[in-house]
Image (cartoon, rainbow, N blue to C red; front, top):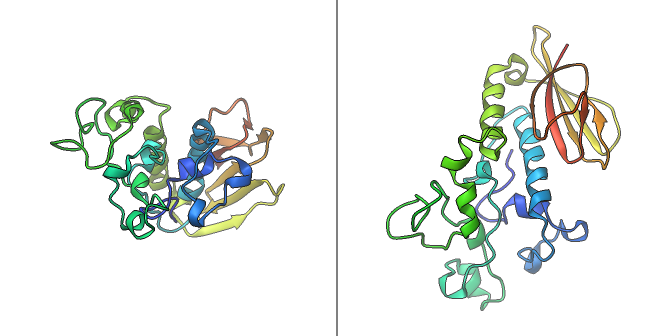
Length: 225
């Protein structure tokens, strides 16, 4: 399972597009007019729990654990992707998802290395640096670490058992189980209204859970009672 890779725009930006544009590819796939990055990150958090909750291998593309967006403000003089040159500058190419990661909030490459980054990092990435997010319990990095730890720890999440749970079409539910009977239900709410979680202990959630209600564009793992 994979949400992003080095050949497509970062999923934080894809998920923050206006609904009519969300599935655009081809020459327009690098057009992010009207982008809502807050919405994109909220949906990216939910998508992380969806993919990490599935059985099998999960591949994380560098920077998704920091919630990085596609970088669009790269001067043409610094672009490096052959796509940009082969299209005679008609398609900006894949440089926007290949910008070096921010490890620290300061420095000429935000901790990536000496002599600056070969593609410019946005100033706002200082706030998304790994060293900054490491100590923030609600950060994207902390969400990934919490989910990965639970994925290794919970017997139901290391076993092959899988079953869909019936429900509305805009609420995705499936159950992971081990032979001893332990179960974890993964709930992904794509609807516009909160939904009820099953009885049990919330192991990890992409957004705060109020009572037993999961908000829209959010996901949670529940160890069933």
